[in-house]
Amino acid sequence: MIWTQTYDPLGNLWLSTLVAALPVILLMSLLASGRVTAHMAALAGLLAALVLAIFVYVPEQGGLSYAERVTAWLPTMLAAAGNGAAFGLLPIGWIVLMAIFLYSLTVTTGQFEIVKHSVAALSDDRRIQALLIAFSFGAFIEGAAGFGTPVAISAALMMGAGFKPLYAAGLALLANTSPVAFGALGTPIITLAQVTGLEVLALSQMAGRQLPIFSLIVPAWLVWVMAGWRGVVGVWPALVVCGGSFALVQFLVANLHGPWLVDVTGGLISLVSLALFLKIWQPAQTWHFADEARDAAAAGAVAHSRRQILSAWVPWLLLTIFVFVWGLPQVKGVLGTPGKAHKDAFVKSDETVESHPTFVMVKVPALHQRIARDAPVVREREVERAIYELNWLSATGTGILFAAVLSAVWMGISPARFLAVFAATCWKMRWPLFTIACMLAIAFTTRYSGMDATLGLAFTRTGWLYPLFAAMLGWLGVALTGSDTSSNALFGSLQTITAGQLVEQGVLPLSDTQAKVLLAAANSTGGVMGKMIDAQSIVVAAVATGQHNQEGPILRFVFWHSLVLALLMGVLVLLQAYVFPWMIP
Image (cartoon, rainbow, N blue to C red; front, side, top):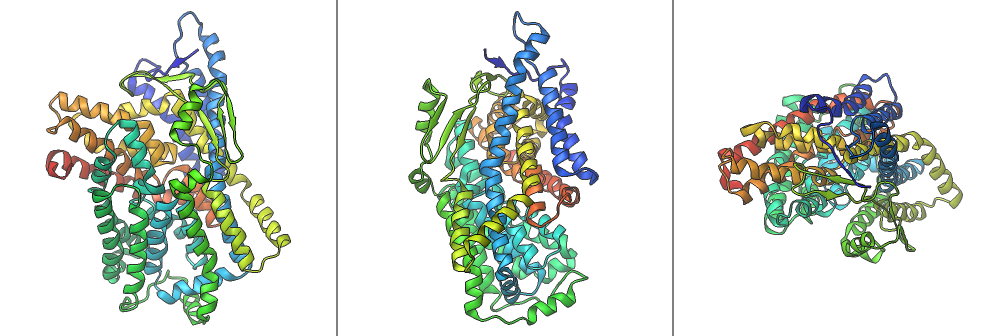
Protein backbone atom coordinates (compact mmCIF):
# COMPACT_ATOMS: atom_id res chain seq x y z
CA MET A 1 0.00 0.00 0.00
CA ILE A 2 1.34 3.44 -1.00
CA TRP A 3 0.10 6.46 0.91
CA THR A 4 -0.11 9.81 -0.91
CA GLN A 5 0.68 12.73 1.36
CA THR A 6 -2.00 15.27 2.15
CA TYR A 7 -0.91 18.88 2.67
CA ASP A 8 -4.14 20.39 4.00
CA PRO A 9 -5.55 17.72 6.32
CA LEU A 10 -7.90 20.14 8.13
CA GLY A 11 -9.38 21.69 4.99
CA ASN A 12 -8.00 25.10 5.89
CA LEU A 13 -4.46 25.87 4.81
CA TRP A 14 -3.69 28.32 7.60
CA LEU A 15 -5.10 26.04 10.30
CA SER A 16 -3.17 23.11 8.83
CA THR A 17 -0.03 25.27 8.77
CA LEU A 18 -0.46 26.12 12.44
CA VAL A 19 -0.84 22.44 13.33
CA ALA A 20 2.20 21.50 11.23
CA ALA A 21 4.27 24.12 13.05
CA LEU A 22 3.35 22.89 16.54
CA PRO A 23 6.21 20.36 16.99
CA VAL A 24 8.81 22.96 16.02
CA ILE A 25 7.17 25.66 18.15
CA LEU A 26 7.05 23.29 21.11
CA LEU A 27 10.67 22.22 20.66
CA MET A 28 12.04 25.74 20.28
CA SER A 29 9.91 27.13 23.12
CA LEU A 30 11.05 24.45 25.54
CA LEU A 31 14.68 24.93 24.54
CA ALA A 32 14.48 28.72 24.79
CA SER A 33 12.77 28.56 28.20
CA GLY A 34 15.89 27.10 29.78
CA ARG A 35 13.68 25.15 32.20
CA VAL A 36 13.65 21.89 30.25
CA THR A 37 16.71 19.85 29.35
CA ALA A 38 17.52 19.53 25.67
CA HIS A 39 16.86 15.80 25.55
CA MET A 40 13.45 16.20 27.19
CA ALA A 41 12.57 19.09 24.85
CA ALA A 42 13.60 16.96 21.86
CA LEU A 43 11.58 14.01 23.14
CA ALA A 44 8.52 16.24 23.65
CA GLY A 45 8.88 17.62 20.13
CA LEU A 46 9.19 14.12 18.71
CA LEU A 47 6.10 12.87 20.54
CA ALA A 48 4.13 15.89 19.30
CA ALA A 49 5.29 15.29 15.73
CA LEU A 50 4.33 11.61 15.91
CA VAL A 51 0.89 12.31 17.38
CA LEU A 52 0.08 14.89 14.71
CA ALA A 53 1.53 12.76 11.92
CA ILE A 54 -0.44 9.69 12.96
CA PHE A 55 -3.78 11.24 13.92
CA VAL A 56 -4.00 14.41 11.79
CA TYR A 57 -1.87 13.75 8.71
CA VAL A 58 -3.08 10.18 8.11
CA PRO A 59 -3.80 10.16 4.34
CA GLU A 60 -7.09 9.27 2.75
CA GLN A 61 -7.36 5.71 1.47
CA GLY A 62 -10.52 4.50 -0.23
CA GLY A 63 -12.37 1.74 1.57
CA LEU A 64 -10.58 2.19 4.90
CA SER A 65 -12.10 3.79 7.98
CA TYR A 66 -10.22 6.44 9.95
CA ALA A 67 -9.30 3.92 12.66
CA GLU A 68 -8.03 1.44 10.05
CA ARG A 69 -5.97 4.12 8.35
CA VAL A 70 -4.43 5.23 11.68
CA THR A 71 -3.57 1.63 12.55
CA ALA A 72 -1.94 1.07 9.15
CA TRP A 73 -0.15 4.46 9.18
CA LEU A 74 1.30 4.05 12.70
CA PRO A 75 4.16 1.65 11.77
CA THR A 76 5.11 3.88 8.84
CA MET A 77 5.54 6.96 10.99
CA LEU A 78 7.38 5.03 13.69
CA ALA A 79 9.71 3.73 10.97
CA ALA A 80 10.27 7.32 9.75
CA ALA A 81 11.21 8.41 13.27
CA GLY A 82 13.49 5.40 13.68
CA ASN A 83 15.19 6.10 10.35
CA GLY A 84 15.82 9.69 11.41
CA ALA A 85 17.19 8.63 14.78
CA ALA A 86 19.58 6.18 13.12
CA PHE A 87 20.79 8.89 10.73
CA GLY A 88 21.23 11.21 13.71
CA LEU A 89 23.54 8.74 15.39
CA LEU A 90 25.51 7.90 12.26
CA PRO A 91 26.85 9.84 10.50
CA ILE A 92 26.07 13.01 12.51
CA GLY A 93 26.43 11.79 16.08
CA TRP A 94 29.54 9.81 15.14
CA ILE A 95 31.21 12.99 13.81
CA VAL A 96 30.43 14.95 16.97
CA LEU A 97 31.52 12.12 19.27
CA MET A 98 34.87 11.73 17.52
CA ALA A 99 35.53 15.48 17.36
CA ILE A 100 34.93 15.80 21.10
CA PHE A 101 37.05 12.69 21.72
CA LEU A 102 40.02 14.16 19.85
CA TYR A 103 39.60 17.41 21.74
CA SER A 104 39.51 15.51 25.05
CA LEU A 105 42.75 13.70 24.18
CA THR A 106 44.53 17.00 23.60
CA VAL A 107 43.12 18.45 26.82
CA THR A 108 44.07 15.49 28.99
CA THR A 109 47.69 15.65 27.77
CA GLY A 110 47.97 19.40 28.23
CA GLN A 111 48.64 19.95 24.53
CA PHE A 112 45.56 22.07 24.11
CA GLU A 113 46.97 24.68 26.49
CA ILE A 114 49.90 25.11 24.11
CA VAL A 115 47.48 25.46 21.17
CA LYS A 116 45.61 28.08 23.16
CA HIS A 117 48.75 30.12 23.78
CA SER A 118 49.95 29.78 20.18
CA VAL A 119 46.68 31.28 18.94
CA ALA A 120 47.19 34.15 21.39
CA ALA A 121 50.72 34.59 19.98
CA LEU A 122 49.26 35.41 16.54
CA SER A 123 47.07 37.96 18.21
CA ASP A 124 45.92 38.26 21.80
CA ASP A 125 42.88 40.14 20.54
CA ARG A 126 39.69 38.10 20.92
CA ARG A 127 38.20 39.67 17.79
CA ILE A 128 41.09 38.41 15.66
CA GLN A 129 40.98 34.98 17.28
CA ALA A 130 37.28 34.68 16.45
CA LEU A 131 37.97 35.54 12.81
CA LEU A 132 40.81 33.02 12.57
CA ILE A 133 39.07 30.11 14.29
CA ALA A 134 35.33 30.55 13.80
CA PHE A 135 35.25 32.07 10.33
CA SER A 136 38.37 31.12 8.33
CA PHE A 137 39.21 27.72 9.85
CA GLY A 138 35.51 26.92 10.30
CA ALA A 139 34.88 27.62 6.61
CA PHE A 140 37.66 25.22 5.62
CA ILE A 141 36.24 22.45 7.83
CA GLU A 142 32.74 23.15 6.49
CA GLY A 143 34.02 22.75 2.95
CA ALA A 144 35.75 19.49 3.76
CA ALA A 145 33.16 17.80 5.96
CA GLY A 146 30.02 19.75 6.89
CA PHE A 147 27.32 18.02 8.97
CA GLY A 148 28.09 19.83 12.24
CA THR A 149 31.85 19.22 12.13
CA PRO A 150 32.91 22.91 11.91
CA VAL A 151 30.68 23.94 14.82
CA ALA A 152 32.00 21.14 17.04
CA ILE A 153 35.65 21.83 16.24
CA SER A 154 35.55 25.64 16.13
CA ALA A 155 33.53 25.91 19.34
CA ALA A 156 35.92 23.53 21.14
CA LEU A 157 38.96 25.45 19.89
CA MET A 158 37.51 28.79 20.96
CA MET A 159 36.53 27.40 24.33
CA GLY A 160 40.05 26.08 24.82
CA ALA A 161 41.51 29.41 23.70
CA GLY A 162 39.75 31.12 26.59
CA PHE A 163 36.43 32.33 25.17
CA LYS A 164 33.41 32.35 27.42
CA PRO A 165 31.37 29.19 26.75
CA LEU A 166 28.30 31.07 25.51
CA TYR A 167 30.35 33.20 23.13
CA ALA A 168 32.40 30.22 21.91
CA ALA A 169 29.18 28.40 21.02
CA GLY A 170 27.32 31.43 19.65
CA LEU A 171 30.17 32.76 17.52
CA ALA A 172 30.90 29.31 16.06
CA LEU A 173 27.25 29.07 15.04
CA LEU A 174 27.16 32.60 13.60
CA ALA A 175 30.29 32.00 11.55
CA ASN A 176 28.96 28.75 10.13
CA THR A 177 26.60 30.49 7.72
CA SER A 178 27.91 31.88 4.44
CA PRO A 179 30.12 28.82 3.74
CA VAL A 180 27.32 26.27 4.33
CA ALA A 181 25.82 26.20 0.81
CA PHE A 182 29.16 24.96 -0.53
CA GLY A 183 29.85 22.66 2.42
CA ALA A 184 31.02 19.03 2.23
CA LEU A 185 32.60 19.65 -1.20
CA GLY A 186 29.50 21.34 -2.61
CA THR A 187 26.97 18.68 -1.57
CA PRO A 188 24.02 21.09 -0.98
CA ILE A 189 24.31 22.66 -4.45
CA ILE A 190 24.88 19.29 -6.13
CA THR A 191 21.78 17.89 -4.39
CA LEU A 192 19.77 20.95 -5.41
CA ALA A 193 20.74 20.37 -9.05
CA GLN A 194 19.67 16.73 -8.84
CA VAL A 195 16.31 17.61 -7.30
CA THR A 196 15.45 20.49 -9.65
CA GLY A 197 17.04 19.30 -12.91
CA LEU A 198 18.90 22.61 -13.22
CA GLU A 199 22.58 22.82 -14.14
CA VAL A 200 25.04 22.53 -11.26
CA LEU A 201 27.19 25.38 -12.58
CA ALA A 202 24.21 27.74 -12.97
CA LEU A 203 23.14 27.14 -9.37
CA SER A 204 26.73 27.49 -8.19
CA GLN A 205 27.06 30.79 -10.06
CA MET A 206 23.82 32.12 -8.59
CA ALA A 207 24.85 31.21 -5.05
CA GLY A 208 28.27 32.68 -5.84
CA ARG A 209 26.60 36.01 -6.63
CA GLN A 210 24.70 36.12 -3.36
CA LEU A 211 26.84 34.62 -0.61
CA PRO A 212 30.06 36.65 -1.16
CA ILE A 213 28.16 39.74 -0.01
CA PHE A 214 27.39 37.97 3.25
CA SER A 215 30.94 36.64 3.49
CA LEU A 216 31.91 40.29 3.87
CA ILE A 217 29.11 40.96 6.36
CA VAL A 218 29.41 37.92 8.64
CA PRO A 219 32.98 38.59 9.95
CA ALA A 220 31.97 42.14 10.84
CA TRP A 221 28.77 40.78 12.39
CA LEU A 222 30.83 38.43 14.57
CA VAL A 223 32.97 41.26 15.87
CA TRP A 224 29.95 43.51 16.40
CA VAL A 225 28.28 40.82 18.54
CA MET A 226 31.43 40.60 20.67
CA ALA A 227 32.64 44.18 20.88
CA GLY A 228 30.07 46.55 19.39
CA TRP A 229 30.63 49.00 16.54
CA ARG A 230 33.75 50.49 18.07
CA GLY A 231 35.22 47.02 18.13
CA VAL A 232 34.40 46.62 14.43
CA VAL A 233 36.11 49.90 13.55
CA GLY A 234 39.18 48.87 15.52
CA VAL A 235 39.84 45.81 13.34
CA TRP A 236 38.43 46.88 9.98
CA PRO A 237 41.67 46.10 8.10
CA ALA A 238 41.56 42.51 9.41
CA LEU A 239 37.89 42.26 8.43
CA VAL A 240 38.70 43.35 4.89
CA VAL A 241 41.50 40.77 4.61
CA CYS A 242 39.58 37.93 6.27
CA GLY A 243 36.13 38.40 4.73
CA GLY A 244 37.40 39.99 1.51
CA SER A 245 39.79 37.18 0.61
CA PHE A 246 37.15 34.53 1.33
CA ALA A 247 34.44 36.42 -0.57
CA LEU A 248 36.70 36.92 -3.60
CA VAL A 249 37.67 33.24 -3.77
CA GLN A 250 34.06 32.22 -3.13
CA PHE A 251 32.87 34.37 -6.05
CA LEU A 252 35.58 33.27 -8.48
CA VAL A 253 35.53 29.52 -7.75
CA ALA A 254 31.73 29.31 -7.62
CA ASN A 255 31.36 31.14 -10.93
CA LEU A 256 34.31 29.73 -12.88
CA HIS A 257 34.74 26.22 -11.52
CA GLY A 258 31.68 25.06 -9.60
CA PRO A 259 30.64 24.24 -6.02
CA TRP A 260 33.15 21.51 -5.15
CA LEU A 261 36.16 23.42 -3.76
CA VAL A 262 34.66 26.81 -2.90
CA ASP A 263 34.95 26.58 0.89
CA VAL A 264 38.14 24.53 1.01
CA THR A 265 40.08 27.04 -1.09
CA GLY A 266 38.30 30.07 0.34
CA GLY A 267 38.77 29.05 3.96
CA LEU A 268 42.42 28.14 3.46
CA ILE A 269 43.26 31.36 1.60
CA SER A 270 41.37 33.45 4.17
CA LEU A 271 43.23 31.75 7.03
CA VAL A 272 46.66 32.17 5.45
CA SER A 273 45.96 35.73 4.30
CA LEU A 274 44.87 36.85 7.76
CA ALA A 275 47.77 35.08 9.50
CA LEU A 276 50.30 36.74 7.16
CA PHE A 277 48.60 40.11 7.52
CA LEU A 278 48.96 39.89 11.30
CA LYS A 279 52.74 39.78 10.81
CA ILE A 280 52.66 43.40 9.67
CA TRP A 281 49.53 44.73 11.39
CA GLN A 282 47.94 44.46 14.83
CA PRO A 283 44.97 46.39 16.24
CA ALA A 284 45.91 49.56 18.10
CA GLN A 285 44.10 48.32 21.22
CA THR A 286 43.93 44.66 22.22
CA TRP A 287 40.33 43.73 23.01
CA HIS A 288 39.24 41.19 25.63
CA PHE A 289 35.99 40.43 27.36
CA ALA A 290 35.61 42.78 30.32
CA ASP A 291 36.29 40.21 33.05
CA GLU A 292 39.22 38.39 31.45
CA ALA A 293 41.90 41.07 30.94
CA ARG A 294 44.12 39.70 33.71
CA ASP A 295 43.85 36.10 32.47
CA ALA A 296 44.59 37.12 28.90
CA ALA A 297 47.68 39.00 29.93
CA ALA A 298 48.89 36.01 31.90
CA ALA A 299 48.26 33.74 28.95
CA GLY A 300 50.29 35.98 26.69
CA ALA A 301 53.24 35.73 29.04
CA VAL A 302 53.57 31.95 28.65
CA ALA A 303 56.44 31.05 26.34
CA HIS A 304 56.66 27.85 24.33
CA SER A 305 59.30 26.75 21.87
CA ARG A 306 58.49 26.44 18.19
CA ARG A 307 58.90 22.68 18.47
CA GLN A 308 56.37 22.49 21.32
CA ILE A 309 53.87 24.57 19.36
CA LEU A 310 54.25 22.46 16.21
CA SER A 311 53.89 19.28 18.25
CA ALA A 312 50.71 20.56 19.92
CA TRP A 313 49.16 21.41 16.55
CA VAL A 314 49.87 17.97 15.04
CA PRO A 315 46.50 16.46 16.20
CA TRP A 316 44.61 19.33 14.58
CA LEU A 317 46.71 19.05 11.43
CA LEU A 318 45.92 15.34 11.31
CA LEU A 319 42.25 16.15 11.84
CA THR A 320 42.30 18.61 8.93
CA ILE A 321 44.05 16.14 6.61
CA PHE A 322 41.77 13.22 7.45
CA VAL A 323 38.57 15.28 7.23
CA PHE A 324 39.61 16.66 3.85
CA VAL A 325 40.75 13.31 2.43
CA TRP A 326 37.66 11.51 3.75
CA GLY A 327 35.48 14.08 1.98
CA LEU A 328 36.93 13.43 -1.48
CA PRO A 329 34.53 11.44 -3.70
CA GLN A 330 37.41 9.34 -5.05
CA VAL A 331 38.46 8.34 -1.54
CA LYS A 332 34.88 7.60 -0.53
CA GLY A 333 34.68 5.27 -3.50
CA VAL A 334 37.86 3.47 -2.47
CA LEU A 335 36.55 3.17 1.10
CA GLY A 336 33.43 1.47 -0.15
CA THR A 337 30.71 4.12 -0.35
CA PRO A 338 28.04 2.96 -2.84
CA GLY A 339 27.53 5.31 -5.79
CA LYS A 340 24.21 6.52 -7.24
CA ALA A 341 24.07 3.74 -9.83
CA HIS A 342 24.69 1.17 -7.12
CA LYS A 343 21.92 2.62 -4.96
CA ASP A 344 19.49 2.73 -7.89
CA ALA A 345 20.22 -0.92 -8.64
CA PHE A 346 19.63 -1.82 -5.00
CA VAL A 347 16.27 0.00 -5.01
CA LYS A 348 15.16 -1.99 -8.07
CA SER A 349 16.32 -5.30 -6.61
CA ASP A 350 14.22 -7.59 -4.44
CA GLU A 351 16.78 -7.48 -1.63
CA THR A 352 15.93 -5.64 1.57
CA VAL A 353 19.50 -5.57 2.91
CA GLU A 354 22.81 -5.32 1.08
CA SER A 355 25.85 -5.96 3.22
CA HIS A 356 29.50 -5.34 2.38
CA PRO A 357 32.60 -5.23 4.58
CA THR A 358 32.57 -1.42 4.59
CA PHE A 359 28.89 -0.53 4.35
CA VAL A 360 25.34 -1.78 4.80
CA MET A 361 22.23 -0.55 2.97
CA VAL A 362 18.77 -1.29 4.36
CA LYS A 363 15.36 -0.63 2.84
CA VAL A 364 13.59 0.68 5.92
CA PRO A 365 10.70 -1.68 6.71
CA ALA A 366 7.19 -0.16 6.59
CA LEU A 367 8.62 3.07 5.10
CA HIS A 368 10.56 2.40 1.89
CA GLN A 369 8.34 3.17 -1.14
CA ARG A 370 5.28 3.40 1.09
CA ILE A 371 4.81 7.17 0.81
CA ALA A 372 4.34 9.38 -2.25
CA ARG A 373 4.72 13.14 -2.58
CA ASP A 374 2.22 14.84 -4.84
CA ALA A 375 1.51 18.19 -6.53
CA PRO A 376 2.04 21.04 -5.86
CA VAL A 377 5.15 20.03 -3.92
CA VAL A 378 6.43 18.05 -6.91
CA ARG A 379 5.38 18.20 -10.56
CA GLU A 380 4.39 14.57 -10.74
CA ARG A 381 3.60 12.07 -8.03
CA GLU A 382 6.88 10.66 -6.63
CA VAL A 383 7.23 7.58 -4.45
CA GLU A 384 9.72 8.24 -1.64
CA ARG A 385 12.70 5.99 -1.04
CA ALA A 386 13.80 5.18 2.49
CA ILE A 387 17.27 3.65 2.42
CA TYR A 388 19.41 3.72 5.54
CA GLU A 389 23.13 3.58 4.75
CA LEU A 390 25.65 2.53 7.35
CA ASN A 391 28.91 3.62 5.68
CA TRP A 392 31.05 3.02 8.72
CA LEU A 393 34.46 3.26 7.06
CA SER A 394 33.89 6.24 4.77
CA ALA A 395 31.98 8.24 7.43
CA THR A 396 33.71 11.50 8.35
CA GLY A 397 33.64 10.47 12.00
CA THR A 398 35.76 7.43 11.17
CA GLY A 399 38.33 9.70 9.54
CA ILE A 400 38.43 11.74 12.75
CA LEU A 401 38.85 8.49 14.72
CA PHE A 402 41.95 7.65 12.67
CA ALA A 403 43.23 11.16 13.36
CA ALA A 404 42.61 10.56 17.08
CA VAL A 405 44.50 7.25 17.03
CA LEU A 406 47.53 8.78 15.31
CA SER A 407 47.33 11.78 17.62
CA ALA A 408 47.37 9.49 20.64
CA VAL A 409 50.50 7.80 19.30
CA TRP A 410 52.10 11.19 18.68
CA MET A 411 51.25 12.43 22.19
CA GLY A 412 52.44 9.22 23.85
CA ILE A 413 49.04 8.17 25.21
CA SER A 414 48.92 4.54 26.32
CA PRO A 415 46.16 2.24 25.01
CA ALA A 416 44.62 2.02 28.49
CA ARG A 417 44.46 5.81 28.83
CA PHE A 418 43.16 6.10 25.26
CA LEU A 419 40.28 3.73 26.05
CA ALA A 420 39.60 5.47 29.37
CA VAL A 421 39.26 8.87 27.66
CA PHE A 422 37.06 7.30 24.97
CA ALA A 423 34.78 5.72 27.59
CA ALA A 424 34.55 9.01 29.50
CA THR A 425 33.69 10.86 26.28
CA CYS A 426 30.95 8.35 25.41
CA TRP A 427 29.44 8.71 28.88
CA LYS A 428 29.61 12.49 28.66
CA MET A 429 27.93 12.38 25.25
CA ARG A 430 25.12 9.97 26.09
CA TRP A 431 22.37 12.60 26.42
CA PRO A 432 23.61 14.87 23.60
CA LEU A 433 23.62 11.86 21.26
CA PHE A 434 20.12 10.95 22.40
CA THR A 435 19.07 14.54 21.76
CA ILE A 436 20.56 14.58 18.25
CA ALA A 437 18.80 11.29 17.48
CA CYS A 438 15.47 12.79 18.59
CA MET A 439 16.06 15.97 16.55
CA LEU A 440 16.62 13.97 13.36
CA ALA A 441 13.65 11.76 14.20
CA ILE A 442 11.49 14.90 14.28
CA ALA A 443 12.90 16.02 10.92
CA PHE A 444 12.19 12.68 9.26
CA THR A 445 8.70 12.43 10.80
CA THR A 446 7.70 15.86 9.51
CA ARG A 447 9.18 15.07 6.09
CA TYR A 448 7.51 11.72 5.51
CA SER A 449 4.17 12.80 6.98
CA GLY A 450 4.00 15.93 4.79
CA MET A 451 4.00 18.48 7.64
CA ASP A 452 7.12 20.15 6.26
CA ALA A 453 5.44 20.62 2.87
CA THR A 454 2.41 22.23 4.54
CA LEU A 455 4.74 24.81 6.09
CA GLY A 456 6.49 25.36 2.77
CA LEU A 457 3.28 25.82 0.80
CA ALA A 458 2.26 28.65 3.13
CA PHE A 459 5.23 30.68 1.84
CA THR A 460 4.20 30.23 -1.80
CA ARG A 461 1.07 32.34 -1.33
CA THR A 462 2.96 35.62 -0.96
CA GLY A 463 2.71 36.80 -4.59
CA TRP A 464 5.28 39.32 -5.80
CA LEU A 465 7.05 39.13 -2.44
CA TYR A 466 7.80 35.45 -2.95
CA PRO A 467 11.51 35.97 -3.87
CA LEU A 468 11.99 37.25 -0.32
CA PHE A 469 10.08 34.32 1.13
CA ALA A 470 11.94 31.86 -1.09
CA ALA A 471 14.99 32.56 1.06
CA MET A 472 12.87 32.30 4.20
CA LEU A 473 11.57 28.91 3.02
CA GLY A 474 15.16 27.70 2.79
CA TRP A 475 15.78 29.12 6.27
CA LEU A 476 12.79 27.18 7.58
CA GLY A 477 13.94 24.02 5.82
CA VAL A 478 17.36 24.07 7.45
CA ALA A 479 15.88 24.97 10.84
CA LEU A 480 13.61 21.91 10.51
CA THR A 481 16.09 19.41 9.08
CA GLY A 482 19.44 20.70 10.38
CA SER A 483 20.97 20.47 6.91
CA ASP A 484 21.14 22.72 3.84
CA THR A 485 21.38 19.56 1.76
CA SER A 486 18.20 18.16 3.28
CA SER A 487 16.40 21.48 2.89
CA ASN A 488 17.31 21.57 -0.80
CA ALA A 489 16.08 18.00 -1.25
CA LEU A 490 12.90 18.95 0.59
CA PHE A 491 11.95 22.26 -0.99
CA GLY A 492 14.04 22.52 -4.19
CA SER A 493 11.30 21.17 -6.42
CA LEU A 494 8.65 23.36 -4.76
CA GLN A 495 10.83 26.43 -5.41
CA THR A 496 11.10 25.72 -9.15
CA ILE A 497 7.39 24.91 -9.48
CA THR A 498 6.46 28.19 -7.80
CA ALA A 499 9.00 30.07 -9.95
CA GLY A 500 7.42 28.72 -13.14
CA GLN A 501 3.93 29.67 -11.96
CA LEU A 502 5.00 33.23 -11.08
CA VAL A 503 6.56 33.68 -14.54
CA GLU A 504 3.39 32.36 -16.24
CA GLN A 505 1.28 34.78 -14.20
CA GLY A 506 3.52 37.69 -15.18
CA VAL A 507 4.53 38.35 -11.57
CA LEU A 508 8.26 37.75 -12.12
CA PRO A 509 9.81 39.74 -15.02
CA LEU A 510 12.30 36.93 -15.75
CA SER A 511 12.66 34.03 -18.12
CA ASP A 512 11.49 30.65 -16.87
CA THR A 513 15.07 29.41 -16.42
CA GLN A 514 16.24 32.59 -14.68
CA ALA A 515 13.37 32.46 -12.20
CA LYS A 516 14.01 28.81 -11.39
CA VAL A 517 17.75 29.30 -10.94
CA LEU A 518 17.23 32.36 -8.74
CA LEU A 519 14.61 30.87 -6.43
CA ALA A 520 16.19 27.42 -6.22
CA ALA A 521 19.53 28.98 -5.27
CA ALA A 522 17.70 31.20 -2.74
CA ASN A 523 16.53 28.04 -1.01
CA SER A 524 20.16 27.12 -0.36
CA THR A 525 21.56 30.59 0.36
CA GLY A 526 18.65 31.55 2.60
CA GLY A 527 18.95 28.17 4.25
CA VAL A 528 22.48 28.81 5.44
CA MET A 529 21.14 31.39 7.89
CA GLY A 530 18.95 28.74 9.48
CA LYS A 531 21.96 26.55 10.22
CA MET A 532 22.74 28.44 13.42
CA ILE A 533 19.32 27.80 14.99
CA ASP A 534 18.60 24.21 14.03
CA ALA A 535 18.35 22.15 17.17
CA GLN A 536 21.05 19.73 16.07
CA SER A 537 23.63 22.52 15.72
CA ILE A 538 22.59 24.04 19.05
CA VAL A 539 23.17 20.71 20.79
CA VAL A 540 26.54 20.22 19.07
CA ALA A 541 27.67 23.71 20.13
CA ALA A 542 26.54 23.09 23.71
CA VAL A 543 28.43 19.79 23.90
CA ALA A 544 31.61 21.24 22.37
CA THR A 545 31.69 24.03 24.96
CA GLY A 546 30.72 21.94 27.97
CA GLN A 547 27.38 23.71 28.47
CA HIS A 548 25.22 20.81 29.56
CA ASN A 549 21.51 21.78 29.55
CA GLN A 550 22.36 25.30 28.36
CA GLU A 551 20.90 24.97 24.87
CA GLY A 552 18.25 27.59 25.68
CA PRO A 553 20.68 30.47 26.26
CA ILE A 554 22.60 29.49 23.10
CA LEU A 555 19.38 29.51 21.05
CA ARG A 556 18.41 32.92 22.44
CA PHE A 557 21.93 34.19 21.70
CA VAL A 558 21.73 33.39 17.96
CA PHE A 559 18.03 33.39 17.05
CA TRP A 560 17.52 37.03 16.13
CA HIS A 561 20.82 37.16 14.25
CA SER A 562 19.66 34.17 12.22
CA LEU A 563 16.29 35.73 11.43
CA VAL A 564 17.69 39.15 10.46
CA LEU A 565 20.41 37.66 8.23
CA ALA A 566 17.81 35.45 6.52
CA LEU A 567 15.61 38.49 5.88
CA LEU A 568 18.59 40.37 4.45
CA MET A 569 19.25 37.47 2.10
CA GLY A 570 15.56 37.58 1.12
CA VAL A 571 15.86 41.31 0.36
CA LEU A 572 18.88 40.59 -1.86
CA VAL A 573 16.95 37.91 -3.76
CA LEU A 574 14.02 40.33 -4.14
CA LEU A 575 16.35 42.98 -5.58
CA GLN A 576 17.91 40.48 -7.96
CA ALA A 577 14.46 39.48 -9.19
CA TYR A 578 13.16 43.00 -9.87
CA VAL A 579 16.08 45.48 -9.90
CA PHE A 580 19.29 43.58 -10.73
CA PRO A 581 18.23 40.69 -13.00
CA TRP A 582 21.62 40.95 -14.76
CA MET A 583 23.10 39.21 -11.72
CA ILE A 584 21.23 36.01 -12.62
CA PRO A 585 23.22 33.64 -14.90
